[in-house]
Structure formats: C-alpha cells, structure tokens
Image 1 (cartoon, rainbow, N blue to C red):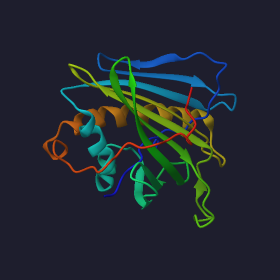
Image 2 (cartoon, rainbow, N blue to C red; image 1 turned 180 degrees about the vertical axis):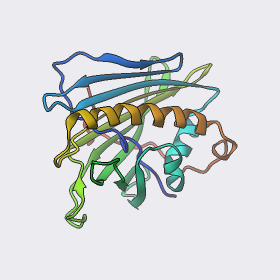
Image 3 (tube, rainbow, N blue to C red; image 1 turned 120 degrees about the horizontal axis):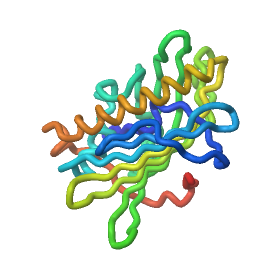
Image 4 (cartoon, helix red, strand yellow; image 1 turned 90 degrees about the horizontal axis):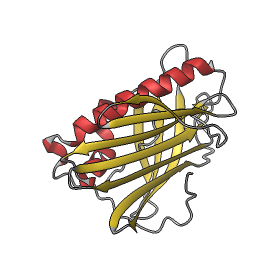
Length: 220
C-alpha cells in the first residue's frame, strides 16, 4: 500500500518562535494562521473541522498517491520510496512551482502514532526531510523541513490541526513565496475537506498503522 505524506507538500516556510501568530483566513470550519520567520519566510498553522468525517477518511486521502494532484496545488509527482515500518513512509515529491519560481523537490520520512489526550484518541503524523545523495542535482531541494498533522474524531466529525515549516532554498523573492504558501494552503485544505467525504474514501484500504515515533521531534 502506497502512502502519501502530505504535509507539507505545498507549504513553504521556516520557523521563528519569537513572533506571534496572526490569523490570515477564517471561516466556520477552517482557520489559517501565519507568522514570519527570521529568514522572512512565512510559517503556516491550520485548524479545520470536517463534519461527518472520520480519521480513516483523512488517512485514505493521504494514502492515495495517484490522486494527490486533485487537492495539492503545484504537485507534479509523488512517489512512495519505501516503508521502513508499518508506521513510517519515505516519500519523494516534485513540485512544479508557478513562474518565476523553479521546480522544487522534497524527500521526507513520516511516522504515524496515536496517544490518549483527555480520554480522546489523537492521531499524529510527524514528517521531516532526510538527505538523499541520489536526488537530481538540477532541481532545488526543500530543506530543512518539519511538519505535523494532529487529528481526532468528535461527535460532529473530524478535527485536523496542521503545522509546517520548511525552507525553499534557491533564489526566490520572499514576497512571492509567502503569497503562494498562503494561497496554496487555503486551496489544499478546502479541497481536502471536500475529497474526504467522497464515496471512494469511505472504505478505502489506506493501510496506515500507528507505531512508535519516539525518534521524531515534536513541533512546538
């Protein structure tokens, strides 16, 4: 079973703990917050509730590599490279960035875990970039990168929290990177919410199994 780390696949950002979050977009079921890093790139944090959805619906969409383009802006290719454990995936992603930005590639390792918080089961998928000497030299690599999904079921549906930070590298105008990051985030999560409820993902065999992710650093 192929898995898709989505995480950050369309979000380009880098962290700074010194600057407070501000709300960039808000609706009844979706909130997107941002803050600028010391490098001048924007970091993004998302909260979303999808009514009538379950955790398996989200995992099913994330597992469907072939359909990634239907909700992730600027994604040209996503490939599952290997599965070190049932909880972990190593994934290669190629982004066809809008002009004048050049293509970017991302090589990541992800891990799915589960914990009990206030008598509620909370799923967490942590993601970080890893080195790979075989990546094409003529494509800029996004690094460093960290991302985290947290999601849990409620009586109304599924609550999803997402935080991603990464550095695009290369020569890029930061104002364009930041604008594209925010716009892509909104587009991706609105499409994700709709896709999760489609019949295809109600009984999709996603194959995810939570495991031990103690070697993955938590985002703050």
